[in-house]
Amino acid sequence: MLRTARTLAASLALFAMVVAPSAAQDSVAGDWVMTMTEPSMGTIEVHVSLQQDGEAVTGSVSMPAMPEIEGVRMTDGEYIDGVIFFLMHASVQGQVMTVEVEADVDGDEMVGEVYVPDAGQAIPFTGKRNAGL
Image 1 (cartoon, rainbow, N blue to C red):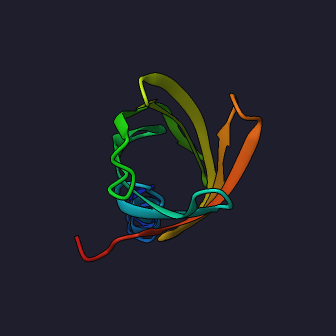
Image 2 (tube, rainbow, N blue to C red):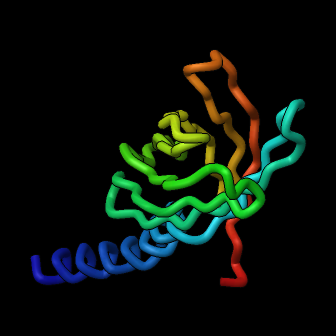
């Protein structure tokens, strides 16, 4: 019985060492640069800093190339089964606008769409985690 318990404990410890690193990599936390191309505006870079607590995602968003977009904030963020989703709220020329962001995440890369409900338009984007920060 004691031998079985030791074997089980050793097996669980080995399993924890193998699984823990892969679970730690399954996170969207970090600094990301998202690039989207919209025909009327050209290529736009969006800088996103994400924090993750379980499935909940929070963070900050900046759009250095578009100073007319102010007060950008993120809400309703979640990361489940390799998919990130959040809402971005911003003031554009005095009007508050909300867009939906959803992407498939694979390691340090993501591919998704920014959906603009008011325009009925989806803008594709790619994202890369900035490992240098």
